Image (cartoon, rainbow, N blue to C red; front, side, top):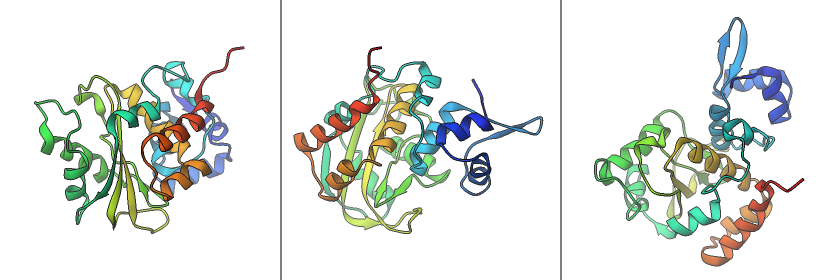
Length: 229
């Protein structure tokens, strides 16, 4: 289902003029069809997460009709992937080489192939969100036949120079590997929303890990659970 300019303005709670500005200057994905802009929901979710833009959670229903599908809980995925402190590296490839170590990778792709998939997404545009945070991920996750979603948080030993909206270096990475495109988009968008929460932001500034961080993520993540009528 494609969305109109008016619908997208409502999703982001801004004017249609602002949406057009984002298309021109901030790489919001859109297509011109008969002189009218059209938008794909999954492209909007990925852009919103990468650009750290707030949006109406109802857009999740445009992806698969469920605000709380199985396997899209950030805290659960982070419990699988874990938190690594003091990850070193002089550039993004070196950092990813260490950060991705031990994560599930199909034999057909291998460790170096996984790094290349992440860097290929980065070549399309920086995944840095500002505030010292970046969310490297493969643009198309379907090549990674992993059994369940994995998120890994890495606190870097030294800040990494990346293209960022606030011109600040990156010192925290959230790495994502998902079994399906739907789950990839759900997790990416939910992570983007979580990072706008003050409690989550403070926890990351304090470099929290383990159960303390997971509890905060679970509590804040309850906003995504559909309540019974």
